[in-house]
Image (cartoon, rainbow, N blue to C red; front, side, top):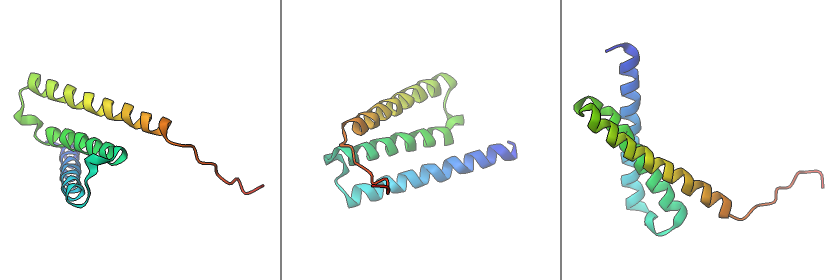
Length: 101
C-alpha cells in the first residue's frame, strides 16, 4: 500500500471513530429522534459514519457486495440531503441588519 493509501485509510478511521463516538454521545445526551432537525443530524451522521466504516473494511467485501452496500448508503445520503433542503426551505426567513438603516 502506498503512503497516500495509508493516509487515506487513517483519515477514514478517524472519521469513522469520531462519527461513532458522536452518535453514542448524541444518543446518551439527547432524544434526537424526537425533533426534526436533531433527527436529520443524527441520520446524516449515522449514514456518513456507516460509509466511512464500509470503506475502512472495503477489502473484506466482494466487489459486487461492496457496490450494493455503497449504492444503498449513497441513496440514504441523497435522501438526507433532500431532507436537509426541505428543512431549509420550510424554515422561517430571518431578516439581517445591513448596518446602513
